[in-house]
Image (cartoon, rainbow, N blue to C red):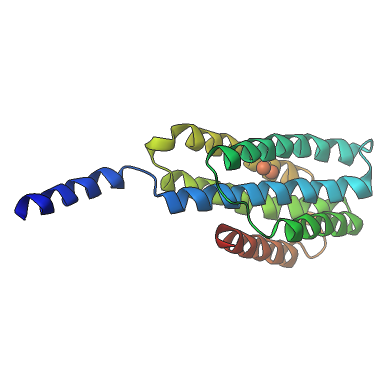
Length: 189
Ligand SMILES: [Fe+2]
Ligand SMILES: [Fe+2]
């Protein structure tokens, strides 16, 4: 009887060093959703600005990185057999609409959208690195690399005068809240 109890305890200890399967699934599902949404935001912006405009080229650089990110998560979702979010069609539409709307409002507004989105994603990626244990070192590395890219996108937004967009403060707050809500939903559904 006593022996049995000790074995159970030992098992628990080992497990705490490993990533919880549920957490792993949530991380991959939400990141896949987020990267998909990001590609759609930049698609929407490029559709308005055109890819040959000066701003279009800057956005295309970020869009190319998002493409790398989503391709990686497309692989990871298969490799780890994680169910993608059921809401991909929603993020498809919502991402494009957000990108196109902010682009119609102007270059600074489009960049303000980038600042808001990338701030949330960057912070989210940072938090995730504590959730993933060393049993998934490669995934941790991937998230760290992507975090760096997202923060670069954030800085590109600032450099392009995002903070002088009309209604910057309220607009970024609304977009940040939207992103956080999308993150919360996409982890589970
Ligand atoms: Fe990304
Ligand atoms: Fe990004």
